[in-house]
Image 1 (cartoon, rainbow, N blue to C red):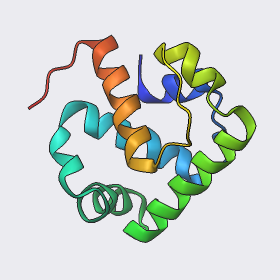
Image 2 (image 1 turned 180 degrees about the vertical axis):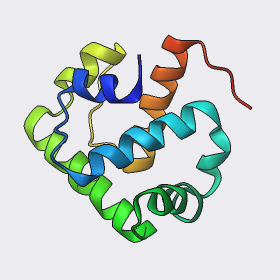
Image 3 (image 1 turned 90 degrees about the vertical axis):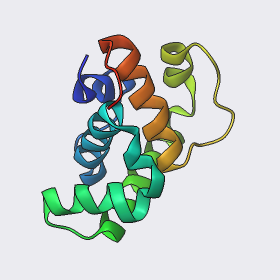
Length: 112
């Protein structure tokens, strides 16, 4: 399963700019957790560079995507996918970690 397929399975809307940013973030983190050491300055900068936006733009777009998703679905789809409930809306970093771990486990990816 690829990150885009995972986001589609979750019912996230590709009309948000944060959709592509989240897919790329999941892919990067699933291959190398070092990106999590400084998410805003490291991971978001890499994403921003690829898409020609600032790290602040990446962060805001991810927050918008996650808030919209949470308001529509809460944790119903995530719970069925992950097998455990999320009681509060995850932060961008938390969701990236959760989904990258899920992706890594289902692709047998090892960390560098």
